Image 1 (cartoon, rainbow, N blue to C red):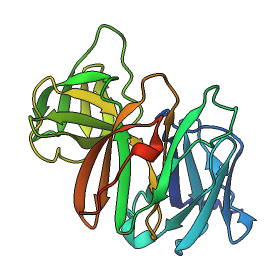
Image 2: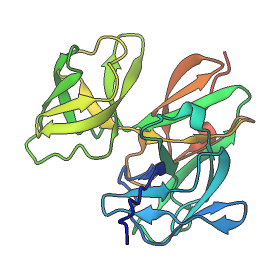
Image 3: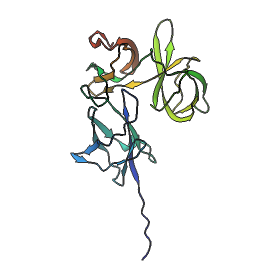
Length: 251
């Protein structure tokens, strides 16, 4: 009997990220659905879900996970890397879920032309900017007096001027050491040394401008919100305890 070579082709790699905590979602009770049928995703211990030998035809995936709002994620292969077709999917904790052990605050609405919404908590920086080595796309960190984990992937460096407070988002690609990380892409624009680094909380926006942003309920909930309308970036300080008092500009 001749030996046979069995080849497995990775057709999709999904990483699920909890927008509120920043953690990778590794729950077993995650369902991936295509046209009403469950997809046979292979779960790995490090939080990745793999679709193997199913073909590379574009489709709409529905993801359901206990404790999170369901989300529909388009899979468009022309937008993905051919060798590693990977998508980060951001799951927003359900408003009334008891799974996470704490409550959340919700900011939602509709804004025509809205393309993106995200937020940071300037009062809770994780660390500070050390040196940015542009050629290697490496960022050294000024650490606080405690052990730090940079495993939440999405972060922002705060930029403060007399006129406005903003932030620049970056993605951690690899943790080189406790004080050095590599970035997935170059930093956009200059960042001051020792600028505070905060974790980014991603919101959700659909093609009609409906948005949803949730953060952990805490006594201090003054966040800096970044949102983009028709290609123009805006920043606004917001008390998430009073979502009705948050005004998003359209110009």
